[in-house]
Each structure stands twice: as structure tokens, then as C-alpha cells.
Length: 401
Image (cartoon, rainbow, N blue to C red; front, side, top):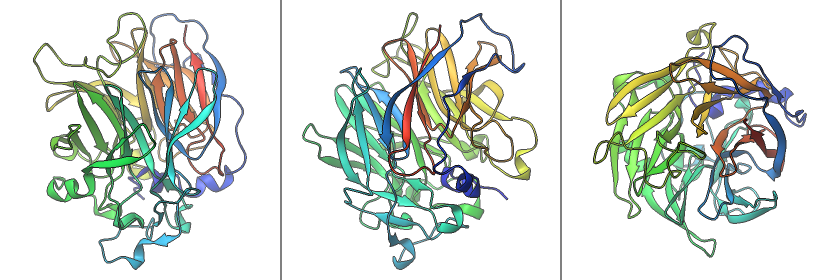
């Protein structure tokens, strides 16, 4: 059976993982995925903990780490609202609005691992009990200059949050937030070319967002749509993935020139264009579908997108939820490495070589959900990002030599 949203994908597998926690992941020499440059053994440690379903993360201009949190769901059934419902077993969703306990939030982590709340009581929702009450809320964070923006994936009427759509919001210094782009309405105005009716989500599953050249680029996994949003809220379409590569479930996006360390541009603050005055360029990874259609071997992809042209950068990955560039190398985060469906404790970080060679450097992660490169030359990964009790999410720091 095909499951195309993150929430739908994990299902009953989480029931055995909830509350179990995980040991710290281990270095992996590569499992024969490919050959690349010689690197030292990575070292790993828990950088921060106490998160509720942590997802995307990024470093701000203040060098603090900002973490998007899905929250803890809600109790308001979407079935009671007069709007189109999510298709498939995830319905009805149950959502919360302005709830300081259940709501999504954005947290800030300083260089010592101390966690503080930037904004809270944001919308959060969860799937039906039949699908494991899997939570969505704030899915991604990004900066334009010194201003913080967040992306909502768990809002909208079909998710039991009838008064707040999925969208991009701006965060003020006092902890308040303002919606600048209604992405639920955007999807209505930009219907996908190829519709997968089995578990279609009217409000989408806006899982990732990056910034480049003074604009934001949110990406919807469910309907396969990449948009451009200016700080004033002007929204336009960049690409409908279903029109060019079909139903691939895009989940991770970074500018080509993003990252930290020698040989890189300045994060997400201006570089990443194919050439001066040219089209913006991104790396994009995908989750793929589950069940028999997924086959028995890893078959997900990292593309390079320039304008509207997609070119395969690497293939043979599995369930990609994050991308990062660090010290001249591109890294992909695999939520799980088992084709057909996710398995707890099989998440991995893979180095992607210039010619598509893949080398696994870390394995054993439990449902990792986001990754970014730090100004200190390390990778930071959200882990235990689905299905764990309140406060069980954490961020892992991985040094790559």
C-alpha cells in the first residue's frame, strides 16, 4: 500500500519504538555503497534534548541553532469541519490551535546545548489512532537576513486546524508570529499535474524550506510542489515535481552553495545561483513511496535543480529527509535504509561524492528528521523525531573529519 506523507509512512512500526529511546548511532564504514575521499572516523554526541517531535533545523546569524518542533498534536477532529478531508487511513486528523502545551514551537539552542523557546502555541495535528497518532506542526525554519521564518505542515482545516492554514510565518523578536503566505490556498491555485488520490492531503505536507537570495523556498512533499515566497508574502510556483518526475515525494532542499567550512558560500544568505544573474540552484532529495511499489533496493535520489531543470546528482539512497553541505562534501540524511517501509534504528548519514558515489558514515539513527551544517564544522541532526513521548526528541552533533 502506498503511503506518501511522512505521517502516514511510519504507521504501526512506531508502536514498538515509542518510549524505547535509542543508543547513540555508530560510525559506519560504508557498507559498500561507494568510494570517495578518505575521511576520519566521525564522533557523535547528544547536543541538546527535550524536544517534541523535532524536524528541520538551521543556524541563525547569531550562531545559535534553531529547531522546528511538530508539537504533540491535538483533540479537535477535522471530521467536524466542513472542508475536504485527507484521503486514506490518516483521516480524521486531530489538531490544536494556540495550545501552549500541545502546540508546535521553535526552540533555540546555544553553543553549550542550553534550550530556550522562541515561539510556542503554534498549530499542531496528528493522524488518526489507526495510523499511530503521528504528529505534524512546525516542520522547518530559515532565516532571511536576521529575520526568522517558520513553515507549518500540520495546520489547515483538513488537519483539524480550521482557523490557520499551512503556510510560511515570520517570527518577531518578542516571540509573536505573523502568517505571510497561505500555502493551503496556494495549492488550490496550483493543482499538481499528477494526483495520487489514495492519500491526497488538501493542505499538503510542507516538510522543508530553505532561503536564498532574499526569498524563501518552501516545498510540499504530498503534492510535490516547490514555491517561492518573498518576505512581503508574494508567492509564486517554482516547480511541480509530478509534471517532470512523477510522484517522488520531495522532502529535502538546500541551495547548491549552502554550507559551512572551507570552499563554501555563506550559508543560505545569498549564494546558490547557477551563475551570476542566473537561475537559483538547489539540491533536492526525496522520500519515495512505500510498500511493493518501492521495490527491494534503495532507489531514492538527490537531484540538482537549476531553474526548472532537474538533473540526477546521485541515486541509490533511501527515504531522504535532510541534506547538508560541509567542508566541500554533500551529505544526505536517510530516515531509514529499508526499502518498502521504515525500520526504527536504521537511519543513516551518507556522503554523496561528486560523481554520485555513496558512503555511509553514520548508521543506527532512530527516525532522524532533519540535518544542517554548523559553523563549527559539524553536522547537526534531529533524532527521535516521530512517535516518541513529550520531550524525547533530541539533536545529535556529528563531527566529520
